[in-house]
Length: 227
Image 1 (tube, rainbow, N blue to C red):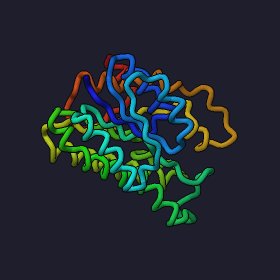
Image 2 (tube, rainbow, N blue to C red):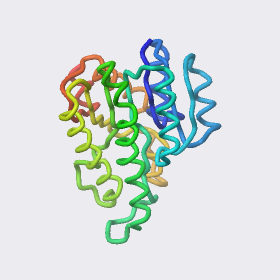
Image 3 (tube, rainbow, N blue to C red):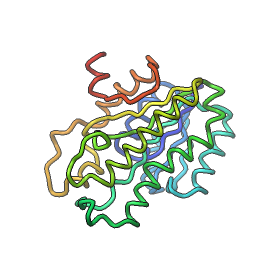
Image 4 (cartoon, one colour):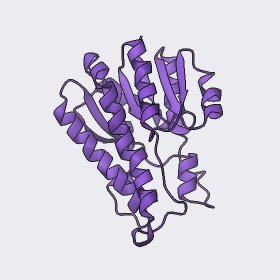
């Protein structure tokens, strides 16, 4: 049975991905910051180990890694948990440096730290790392300097991880706009009902996983067009 570790899995894209992998018979290790929300989501998955906590806390990452070690296998790591930062988002000239550090802790350092902890299992299964990124990491959107620069750093870490570890695949996956709570927080007061639901983006990531192209950065929009 294949095993996936998905962070930020209590809602949005993480939960939608877990739904599909569960339907395909995968075992899941899932996390989220809020225990009640995570437990509610995990109740619908047959083989799920739910571990609530904050990915910026080393002790929580250690707990996730111990779950992987107990199962003895990891085929897919999806670093989906992200921190937007202030809402509405400030311009860089007034961005609080302490808050920016927290954004980088969650969006950059935590994915790398977790990958380091479970890399032996990923190498053993010739597995896949997916780091969920954003177009804000490549486009200079006003007001997105904090979140966007963290995703740009994550993109580069992903690229180098793939170059340094040929036995695994490392993907920066850009899902595009989605109708999620984080997206609503990014645009407070705006109607985002025209954005696609997260479950409509999951097939693009599954195509990436199943076709396993070379490591790199991939957009959901391109994957769905190619499909």
